[in-house]
Image (cartoon, rainbow, N blue to C red; front, side, top):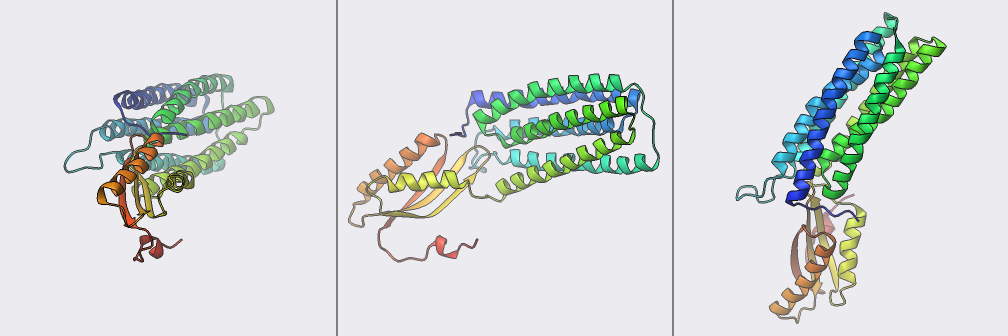
Length: 306
């Protein structure tokens, strides 16, 4: 099970992933710029626009990772982890803008056809681009598994889409080269832009969910409930609230304990629950309130809506 952690090594990993993303974006931009100018391919131009937006997005990711890695302060006691969600939200805007631009150019190219030249060069450059992207994505996915970084995850998701779109562009250029269907280049570009818009919406949805303190997955919540049930001394749990601060989880819950326990005994049993949770999420923040079992009270659970 993935465990969100925050330490010096993992922060360095996130920064390395962000730097590799910036370097890749710059290299791909120059490669695709040359190919787009030389071949006149709209599909390659769409990929070039995407790479240009990647540079801005990757720089934002790098800044967000550095900022979110700062320790909590007296004025920001929850830390700065949500800076990564803001980064992901801005990335989605760049990606969506790229998709809209390519659709516009596709419509314009359909009205005013433009002949392609030397598609073999375009194919070669796109293959090189795809290989470089696969290498960076593999490293980013390793970092995401270690750190649960939303910003790096959003960046990686975008580059995974790039792998697919690069393959689509290569296919489009092959069709144009050997089947002489020039309009297929425009079709490929529009399909690429469609995927860009789809993934922009997906990234934005995840970022907004984190910023609005969306509950963690049913799997995580279920694990917390199971820990309480298996304790042997808890009569129940209610008002469980969870959220992600950008790789660091927060759990708030009310434990139902025997009302005859002393304050010290209740504290010790609460510590057992907290320690058990930390076995699964070592760097989580846990807030537990003890309630006497069987007491009728106005609970948060009674006021929640689906």
